[in-house]
Length: 320
Image 1 (cartoon, rainbow, N blue to C red):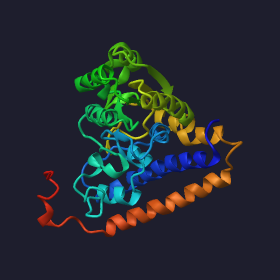
Image 2 (cartoon, rainbow, N blue to C red):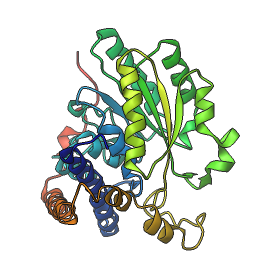
Image 3 (spheres, rainbow, N blue to C red):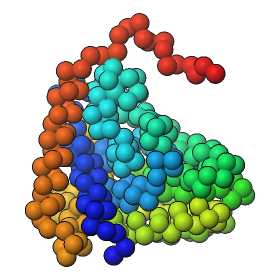
């Protein structure tokens, strides 16, 4: 195992932060205080953390509508995220972005994106900047299996190969594009082979295994930093909640989610694989700390003010 004990503890903390954050939102959403839709990342924690533990604050990521996990893994402040989702002035985007548009450029988070397949074209811009400046930075885009069919995603992959950009295309294959199965909607049924057709290395990994994701991304990031161009990684995982909160999930088999929670839990798998390095007491202590942090973030978000009406036209246009 190439990771040190502090690095392992950090990885588990990030995964549990995502889990606790999302499960709390699942409960809070029933109270009617959260404006707009939310799309939960529960069940896919190992992907975001396995990717972002290989990155620095100077690297950039582009996200999806299901972006809370990516934000947390990249280092965005949980209190600011919670306030943003509740639409409050203290949010990372001053309450104007909400769940699907959280961004934090200081952390290299280009933003969650309600446009399906919207991240890859943005990320190759960040990658081109890094290549032009010669700063060894990389850009990482997250896209779902549904978004993998988007034409702009194809154009972005082609451009990344042509220009040999330091880009990693992460395809989070959780089995469904909204309610449409991957096997029906993806021609050839293999996102990895399709990505290879653009002329880049591509690999499929077990997306519920942090270590499988981490090692694949580590190799891709090293190649990108050394001028070796882009890589595509398809991470196979499962989302436990619906496409959005309120989705009745009629497309799922009876008992499917219960089975996934029992057999395909990224946190349980991580615990199992680190029993020689980490004790249950150490990991339980992390969970206790994180639960308190999430409680604090919710209480603060509920008490914080909404943006004043006079700010409705601020932050709309950039000034140069």
